Length: 133
Image: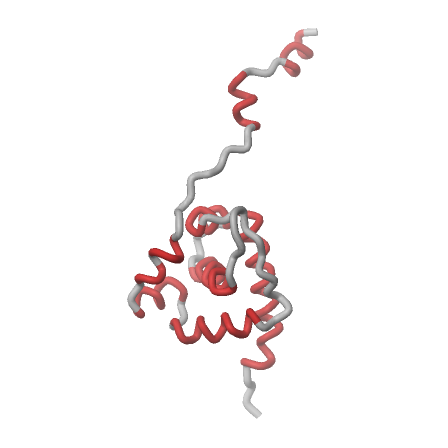
């Protein structure tokens, strides 16, 4: 009987934990911060030049892997998906949660972007990687 009371007792604190409250995240990080980076800062963060990123975005948009993924509040553009992916792979210690907080998207959206971009790039490799004869 003692165990039953303990298991079935629910406090207000316990109920608050179950509520779906929005997490605090950076707002418009890509639009306001990344666009202000100098060429050097941009390269430091994403490990590619803006020109290379733009070429990658064009190829991604034309691929079967880009489908205008819906985020929590809006569509995530091809540019944003590429930059999110590059940020993740360029920062060894960041987690999906870190990326989601930085770019104001859910962890599940980060996972989908990483998954799609990895397949896109692996299938793009025969066109880009040239082995010596």
